[in-house]
Length: 424
Image (tube, rainbow, N blue to C red):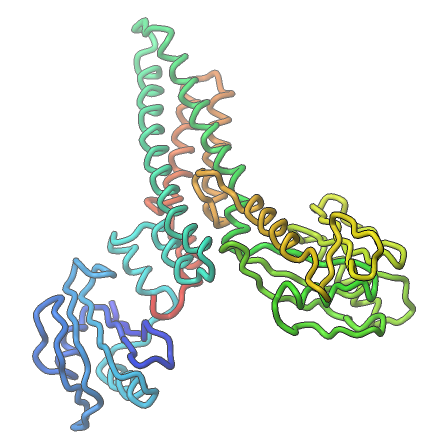
């Protein structure tokens, strides 16, 4: 197996850390730094290559198997300049190491039993987290899922053992409550799986971010509202109808929940092909939204969303021009009603991402594994033949094992680890 390396810190900082992992790690590091320090003790060393001093760096050694990857690892803490980093990378390449592929460190950790697939995915989600709620999902949600998976696996083990007893001793006059207890256990486990699947869309929304789309007629205040909620001058505001032609998005953080808020072209009949395309795109964005903010300024015919199945929040704009301000009215110009609107949007975001303590299935792969497990359990419940029921239970165990990667994982490893950054 080759020895790999990669920077595990972002560019531009005062310090760059380069990680090495693989069989030649110690030999390559000794060629650069001379005598290595004691394991897990950082020591200052001058790095030399081709009779040239490259940098003075902190060197830390993590011997196998007690390292991140389970292999010999070394971390070089360099000065953060680009020239220093490039010189050390060039030297490592000359000495026989190669740049790691995305996720390769974590993949090796998985192959060496330092991580399972759930832990690897949680690591990737934690790195990608941009808000507090996403960070909590990556840590707490993953811990809940890991604990639930262990419990499900143990329950399945007992159910399979009970089923095997019914198959192996059909004439031993086993008490009738044995089969009743087996059926009850399968039913209870299936219900737990269904609860997790029901909560899965909320976990996915939190991981990926919610989509809120602003719809309404031209000049109703859509772009002004976007700018007000974003706290920045993002979209062009003009009295000329049809100024907004394309979708303009901004990312909001609502109580730690990421929300993509999108301003769209005003909805109206038009002969302008460019504006018509903008309106088509507006409706297309609304079709995939988690929430539509339906805007009405009270001075022109209100538009109606063509997507009645999407949750819609009706908002009256330009409250400063109205004699009587409705309860849902706001004025982006004066700020009237904006705190209340922001509170309502935050409450909706929290509801749409609430998993209520359920195992957080935040990735399509995870959902597919649990769905397959639940389907096998449902088949077992409906199957009167003990042998076939036993086969269904073994199928459920196989599907559940794919969740952590204990069996049948070669086909999915690339999909799991390719989304990582280079240094993980």
